[in-house]
Length: 309
Length: 264
Image (cartoon, rainbow over all chains, first blue to last red):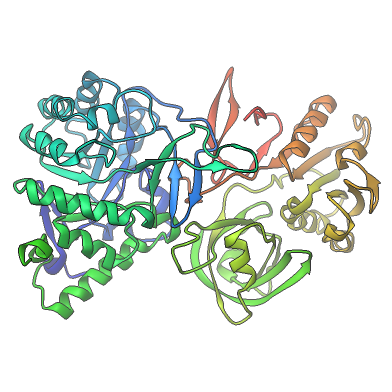
């Protein structure tokens, strides 16, 4: 398995054995994938988005496949922070892998309250603040598309947690770089990008939208070039905050694109649906690439595409 | 525990118009799987079509460790699958999901299949036929005669088979549910299992309610992960006085007729 010294990274004060993280919303609470791989081999797992109150989620159909992509509109279905801290976190903590808890809310106060309820919980390595879900009516993306509102959420979360805070940004924000700069100023410890790209699909036989919620978020290989570009753009402007790149990563080469664009780590989402062991294959591929290229630690590659350009 | 394997394909042949039977060697799956469970198949190593496709386990040859899948070409994924040749490998995960309830006292088993829904029922019929004291009746409905698949296999397995087609080209003309026996009360233990189009399942659920019994239906919803992680395949089920979303891939695909909410 991966050589820790080559792939080991420090991210927002968290020590990861490698920079490959399972992405929120695609990995449940971790245990769903336990039959298929040794979860301890992952850099970290980001859990399904958690809100203050339980959420039932959106009306089905919630997913539809598109060319090299997946449109989803789950709508942040989750059992609520109380159930997560009581029943789920203790189980997830036994997986022996750093856990990043993704949190969402409809108001600044809700984000703060969810962060407060998670404070000090065993097994948690960091919080990922979701200000980028395109599938809920209130909150979330409305914060993520406005630099000032985004910074208010991050300030409020930072006040209520001692965990490192990662802010997850949306490609649907008018200007992702200005949102990134704003949350960096508010003290986010890392930035993850991108969440899904808003999209829709219409069934021409039934003459109606494919998704129950009409619109959804697009993920998968179809969005990778958008995600690499945004990682590049944010990396050029926000140099003091580490980035976690994601969007359509299916193999080590894809992950390397994000790293070379300026990401210190990557999250893998939709790829897990296609190949539950894809994260392990990416880790192995990164290790091989570093060996072949004489890279002593993968951190050397972060932003190498623009640093040398 | 489900496994992720590359299973050698032993056979993949057309058995009807656009309908194929694939046999793969997958002892790790056959050792574990129960009737009504499914496998999640990657139909290409390319990135389009992207997602896996879920298929009912049609039949298992436990001693040989072989698994049979019956499928119809519906789109890109199944079309690619039809092109896989014997000797190649099939990338599959499974067994997945909750299968049919097999914990039954001797009695009458009625299976109702519509179209490709029959694929989920053969393994169930074979299971009950191997036990003592069960009478099995299979009600199978299809669009037309040339799409009637598996009737003789159900009969060979030991079921009494009744056929209906939408156009009357084989058996009864009309919905198969028209033929369900009237008033089964007092005839001893009586079990209903159904898989097929939503409209058919809904009529089965109404039948069960009239008869005062709880049947089982296997639902077919779009699926992404197949392991309960993504919540993409959720459907509405009753919970106490209210309802909740349940994952077709984990809590299903088999649900009881009394829990499914049919209004979407």
